[in-house]
Length: 339
Image (cartoon, rainbow, N blue to C red):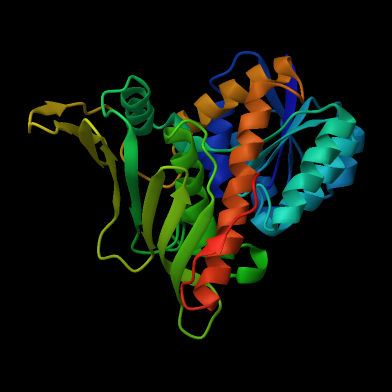
């Protein structure tokens, strides 16, 4: 039985991570860390016999943990991960892995030094619609992919309409749509085209009035032989999650759980999937992530699951930094260093 703890018990942890871990008979969440009293009380009410801590070091010293699941606001990810790794725990981090490109390499070195697995939650890879998309691309139904478009339209940041967490509106805490949704589309782009890494990015950003928090983004990402576009917004009139994948043989349109494959001779095929209603938490997707994390523990810190995950994460944080540089210089094209 793997003994795990969650650090940061906000809505994502309570509504997605906890339920996802609950699907595994080989995992027990034994402790919760959160400096906010109300969240510790929420954990006590939700989880039988749970132990709660307001101090991370006390939890790491007092519990014999196999892993720590970090679901705190992004600004805390790096320090929490380093302390957990030094305490001998494997680490799973809710996106983003970190906020600065150099920190990604530092975290990987810390995990390697400790011989522990470090991974980031890339939960959209476990969404049925995008798993089906990946299958269709991998089976060559589209031919060679030439262009991708991934759009994420939201009427507000997650949790705002219910009076929930506000960190997404605080740039110092890792807020902004580039981190909240850009991270997702960046790792999806890479995964869908077989793990190719981006070579350049250009972006236009909009910001909440009177702040440096980005709430709108148009992004172009270049890969070898493939281009990708993303449109991200917290200003939309209604929620929409769409994608368009263009290949030499066919085009795939994705709108929520509806998928339509259209060949170049205009034959149409319904490839739709069944999934829970689109929301901000997706516990069933996290269960898939949890399964791969447990598999990665068996592979070790040099295994393919961790290596691929961290390569996606390193490219995502580089794309975010590059998009900001581009937006600050008139949407100029910014070349990215190889990952």
